[in-house]
Amino acid sequence: MIAPRNLKVSIVVGQVSHAQAVIDDLRQRAMAAAASPAWAVSVDVVQVGSLTDGDAPGGGEGIVRLQAERPAPAAARLGALAGKPGTVGVAGRLVRDNLESRRVASTLARHKDVVAALRGSAVVVAADPSADRAVWQLRRATGAHLVHGPAAMVHAIKALANG
Image 1 (cartoon, rainbow, N blue to C red):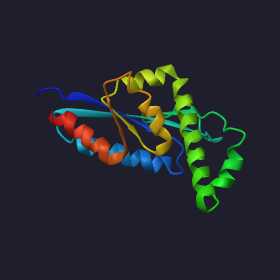
Image 2: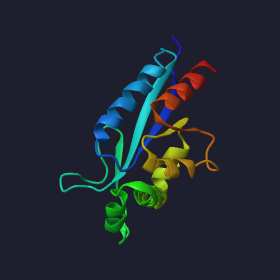
Image 3: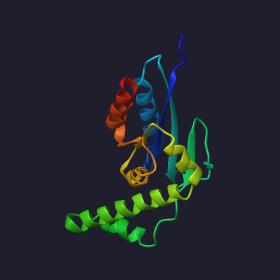
């Protein structure tokens, strides 16, 4: 019997309200995408967010939890603008989402060991829009497939497994 080849998939999760459900779904899809005895899939997760009292940096099951930087002082005002109707609300949501993705990316960039682990992956997936900038910043540092969402992740895994 031939030993299976390793395929490392890393998932970056930003600020989502249901992070564990997102992580479980993406992990299950990654395992199913390369459901071949020739491949051994390992999934690592980096979650950047506000840690509650019960959470601790680091985590089990291949999950690394990082404490996000503090929000900008104007974040509360942007939240109020984002809830308004019309063009003011649209502009508020765009600015709020832009600042959130910058916050996730700068938090991840401060942890060089985590970035090095992401660079060693075959596929790096951004699980939500706030993680897109952090994943995209790896583009010059790795040859990994950098994708957003479950469909693109499954496609990248199948392309690697069949190619």
